[in-house]
View 1 (cartoon, rainbow, N blue to C red):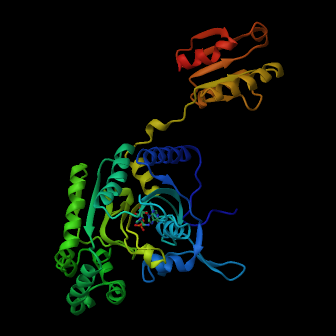
View 2: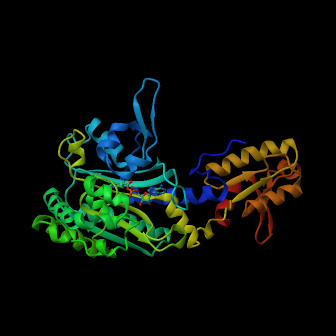
View 3: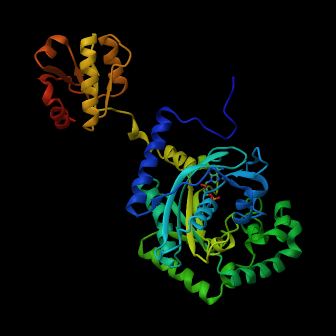
Amino acid sequence: MITKPKGTTDLYGIEGKKWEYVNSMIREFCEMYNYDYMRTPVFESSELYHRSVGETSDIVTKETYDFKDRHDRELTLRPEGTAGIVRSYIENKMYANNSDPVKVYYNYPMYRYERPQAGRMRELTQFGLEVLGGDDPMLDAEIISMPYRLFEELGIDNVTVMINSLGDKESRDNYRKTLVEYLTPKIDTLCSDCQNRLKTNPLRILDCKVDKDSEVLKNAPKIMDSLNDESKARFEKVLEYLRLMDIDYEIDQNIVRGLDYYDHTVFEYAVDIPELGSGATLGGGGRYNSLVEELGGPATSCVGFAAGLDRVVLAMDYLNLFDKLNKSIDCYVMYVNEEEKMKAIEITQNLRLNGIVTELNNTNKNLKAQFKSADKYNAKQLVILNSEDLFKGLVTVKDNITKEEQKIDEYELVDYLISNL
Ligand code: HAM
């Protein structure tokens, strides 16, 4: 038997319903906030990720699916959404004649070669938001508040926004120097990954999962002390706007994020769901004011976020938030002979076009089996056709809950069902 690759899932049945529900909420939410849907290719040139996510990041060094096509072009399955969106923003000159920020959302699969476990997939789905071309701290607050409210709307109301500021380049350079000076004599006490990071990306040492309880890290100099006045004031504004929007946040100076493109605001959504393991985050993001320029576009301030939907669905499962999703349909149409079947096809189409969720006997079952199917679908109303009634222009409608039956004029069926559903 051929089986699915490790770290991937098949979605069907009730699982499909759960994802459909979450997807529809996301779509509604993004429309409400005036964000447009955007899609970029599932593979891009490998160079894009090396230059954006970062040559020394875990994603690029250990997790990308890289391959060569038949003309030896080096390509990578997208491990995250931001780089592709930025590439497209530049390539399509979306900045031209545009004084308003470009606000987009996406919701599609990403690929990371990680060790699969609950909520950690190799094919993962991210819902993301990006605002390209806006520096106002108000936009940071908008991007942070939107998923927070969406999680709340989905029923996940125990989420905390963990927030930090990496400051501008000057602040970060200062901090990197201070941190390296502090860590160098103590680095032997930390794990081998941290020892490598001291040279390549010392800030990443702060959110090491292995050494997170080490005294060395607990006593490390704090980034807030290295922020210059401008960066500090900017961060204060973001926090002020968050308070105005009534968003619960906690400052966590160890958040640096695993991708290299961030500056100023960085944030994650922490949630206490044992199934996801300790320290699990539903999503994260931050400001990336240099990335567009680094990839060859004009200087453009941006801010964005992405959530792992596999984790969101797991969290909702844990909180029993899908209980109400048990499948039900409005109407099931029943018939026995060919003449009734012709009418059933016609009626079913008409009901569906009138917004009534309808199924019909698809496999020429006998009546008893059709009643069973209707119950399986939790049909609220049954439309039962028989040749004798049809001759008089009548159909039988049975309320599948109260079991009351009515014969009604075929032409009044739609109105009758709508007023009884
Ligand atoms: P990220 O932190 O790498 O950020 O991923 C965002 C979220 O995707 C994570 O918080 C997690 O929920 C989910 N995720 C990551 N890896 C996996 C996995 N293997 N399985 C399941 N879920 C996973 C980014 O990707 C940035 N592009 C976010 C961003 C957008 N920053 C600015 N704009």
